[in-house]
Length: 462
Image 1: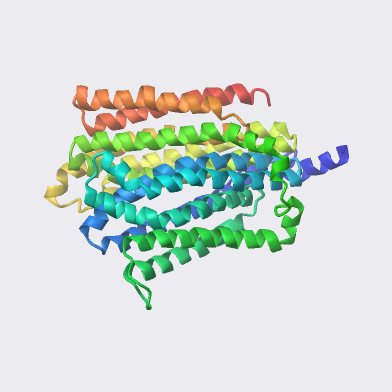
Image 2: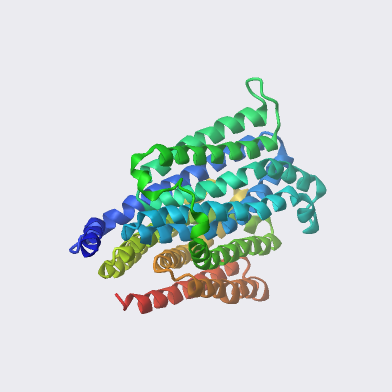
């Protein structure tokens, strides 16, 4: 057994792994993750342009469609993020059958979570009308989600397969499957939305069916690779034994529910922030939205780096190379600080250039919006540093199975500090949208500092 453990350690990390070597491992995992997510973002943009051709009412409804879909699906899917850490630990320890056990439990959990989400989407119209949405708008949204309901189960199953692929370093498989599934999405959406090549014209529902085709393709494609690939045989993915390992199911929920609650709390905070900015008028909303587009791109990259760091820390813990854990954490922190500082300089130095991609900055009618954008970019330069560090540390702590306390810290920073300060500065002190941005920045600062302190405490063990 000692000899096997030695082999596992040697094959995971070199005891004298250099800064360059660890950085290479982190980025070799993070870059494909970020690339896959950016591919999906780009495909979503193209799909929105298709819907825009169906008329202004559908374009308006699409904003509600995508915000509702992201909020609900990300919250539900996030509980499966625990798989990457659990599989990472098992992979580092060379406990290959445990990996198959976790994947089977992930498939089952995905199916169970899908049921209430499908019911919610199927009856989304009365829910939206209860919150004051116009019946015509709610009808368009329901048309989409009744078609999208067919996508829910394959999407949850696909996330499980994705977590497996990343955790065992099969990055090329996930990136290839993502590219191919996006091609399926775009082709199917174009065909069904506009009724091309003899297919019926189904309008907004066409995108829902296209999303179902995309996720079904991804799941079947990766499942076929798992079934026929020789390197996957050792995991026993298709030898059903889930009922014999219910303890792993409960372990996955124990680690995953704080992630789910935290993600849900953050999604809700985005929604409430949007509502508050909407009270300030269209100019504030437009300015904040422009800056948010760039911050969103930054967070996609940071989230990928966060998940990659958590997986590698899981590998090191599973292989009992505990001395590597601390180095991975601090190297990841250093890279996030370098990246976000460069972004901050860009936000401060060329805000008008960034704004020009969304509106004509030389048009006098846009002068007030542009001035707000410049000011918000200055605040965002600092807030995205704090938010990036916060997200990175959440992933690093997740690699140590530490999810509950970071959840409390993260939600407290957002809801007890960030949101009240945003309201106070924006409306009581009449600073407007800049006040909302400042309140959010201060909440992120407190969140980052608390996560840093938590990491410092735990890292002392290593």
